[in-house]
Image 1: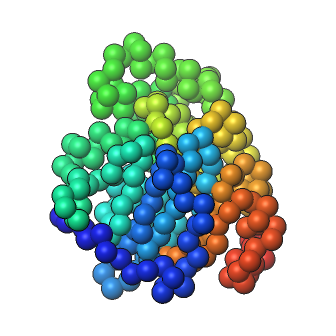
Image 2 (image 1 turned 90 degrees about the vertical axis):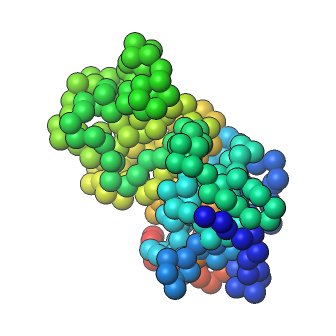
Length: 275
């Protein structure tokens, strides 16, 4: 599969692309396009995420947030542009002015550096919490079982689940399952963590525990890109807030600008709707 670099300009599409593009950032998203059939989901998206920072993606349903997240670790292919994580072109090798898709083995190797936490947990139901966290280090990274077990126990303790290592997903609450999912993603020692609406499937009383773990990760300097509607989390933790709508970056900047003094009416309307 090849992907052309040429794309429609964001200015023509009406987007306001981020003005703080940093070529030395851990994540560089350059003029990325993605369509499903005739429906263009991402329209010439450009964004940079500095190492050690937290970027929150906000926007209405269907704005392209989750698709962008899935493109970053190549769960979705792209139709144009480039995504670079820690200097590596994700999912493709560059030949001339075209991207040629890598082999599944090469893509899987790149994903080892990118942890992802999904809305629906995606734990293996036949494995205990401990076994879920150990699975990738043993099965993918080929680490020893003893080393992986100790690391998994440490991570479960880190997310407040030291006493639940032997529990199966069905024996855990939604919030506990999501914290196991976070521990599982951390087990591969990723350089980047992606969170796709990690609290949207949880009962309200369970949301806080998951957000607390994410706040701790942010405080420890983990680079994170988070799709969420939790405005309080965005205001308190994010270094950069990106508001998307219709596959475009409408507005981006620090929380104090985007959340407290939005410049675009579309942004203001959305924030009013989620108060």
